[in-house]
Amino acid sequence: MGIGRIIQKLKLRYGSQKTVLRTLRVMGVRIGERCRVYTANFGTEPWLIKIGDHVCISNDVTFVNHGLTFPFQEKYASLTAFGPIEIKDNCQIGVRATILPNVTIGPNAIVGACSVVASDVPPNTVVAGNPARVVCSLEEYEQKCLARHIDIPEDREAARAVLEKHFWGDGP
Image (cartoon, rainbow, N blue to C red; front, side, top):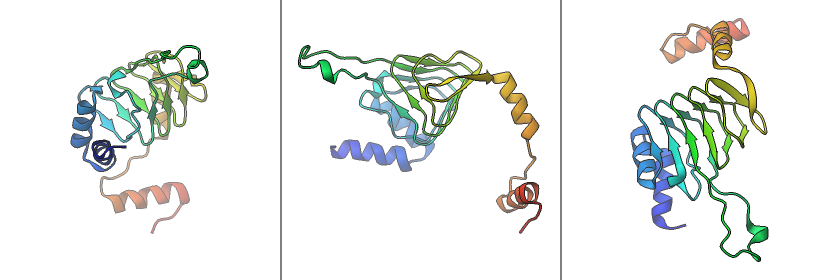
């Protein structure tokens, strides 16, 4: 790994969101506005990744833009299996998800943590699992989130007290 690649990885891992997005664009990722990216795993072909507006990519998400052709390379020396990945507007990709080649996600879709996305994700859905499958609509998920909602203050210590009281019945 060359020094330039090491610097890119450091910027992706430790840089501000502004630095992360700028670095991804330099690497060739086509990325929209108002995105948050918390992963550095954009594979060897980042220019085959397109991310829309208002997308959140969680920690340790892995993008894979190529298939498995090694067993055939003795027979076909130049055989390749590259494919693009596109994440449409207003999506969230959960922690440690893996997105495989030739996949389009969304718009308005959520990919659950640790999911393996091997085929397209329909708009307005939540998918999870290996392989990722539709578990509910975005509207159903919104209702579940609203039912579990807890009003917490912005102050971190006050938020801790509210959450401890809610979940454990006490506070600090």
